[in-house]
Amino acid sequence: MKRYHFPRLALVAVGIPTLAAGMLGAASPRNLVAQVQASADDTFIELNHPEGVRGTRAWSLNAQGDVIGSYDDANEVRHGFIWHDGRFTTIDHPDAGHGRPGPLGPQGTTLYDINRFGDITGRYINSNHEAHSFVLRRGTFTPIDDPASPRGPGYGTQADGINDAGDIVGDFTDEDFSVHGFVLQDGTYTTINAPHAEHGRYVGTHAFGINDAGDIVLHTQPGQRIFEAYLLRDGQFKKIADPHGVGGTVVNGINAAGIIVGEWLDGNGVSHGMVYCNGIFTTHDDPNAAGGQGTGLKKINADGDIAGWYTDAHNHDHGFFLRLGHDPCGE
Image 1 (cartoon, rainbow, N blue to C red):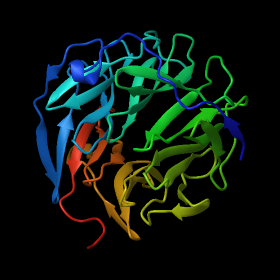
Image 2 (cartoon, rainbow, N blue to C red):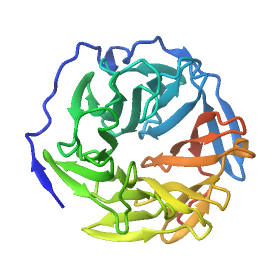
Image 3 (cartoon, rainbow, N blue to C red):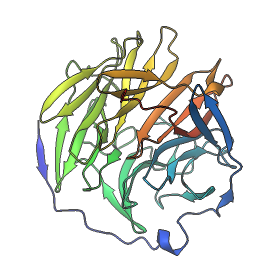
Image 4 (cartoon, rainbow, N blue to C red):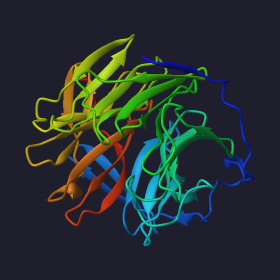
């Protein structure tokens, strides 16, 4: 594994208000009329941003139940959001692009994770179709760019997870556009490659979640193989494979109790929400996902509440807040 040393994160002011001053963003807060639904004993609260006519994705939530994510507007531009007390507020990085989608998908801003202190990791894609990441802390964007990733269209860094200590995990593209995971701790970037990870254009390893113990969940982006998921703990990889996942298993988040969330893929490529704890896999599908592309669970907070989204039969994404109806650890 390579190691680069950089100074500890320094705050760089960009002239936007802090959360305490009434939230962030370029758009006004909007009221939400939540739809509450149950699948078995689970409760799904659907989150659809009013301007997300091309879809809403909920990526993470904190202990207070604030949800962050992204939505795509009518012009196919992506915007970050925070959902607090039933209201959406848009958060856009000032350098995010507003043009047509490119090799990395829509231009704009995505928010991926939030910790107990309200620090947010995210990514923006600029008008040159480059991906740059950041930590948003008390109204200030601090850049997160793995130095091993070149600059130019199609290249970049994605910061996917942050714990309460400020450790960050994510991924970057190398000169050949292969994808590698990384962890950023105390100013040092360390590359993470999953066992058996393939190499090729946008194929490789995604490090997606980290808890306060430093446990990291990651998965492969396959070329010829299926998705493979791992827990990285104390330098050792443990494979996580849902027995239903003939198309593979993906893991996205892990909380302080070690409960892991993600999804498994069936033989038709449809995803199903998954929770893994103490060797037990349980499936949690949003009931509105029937006939669509499935359900994905993205992050889990200390209370066991989950953020994610489902894709309906019209290929439209809908975010949700999920409260489980039973203990997934079998206790």
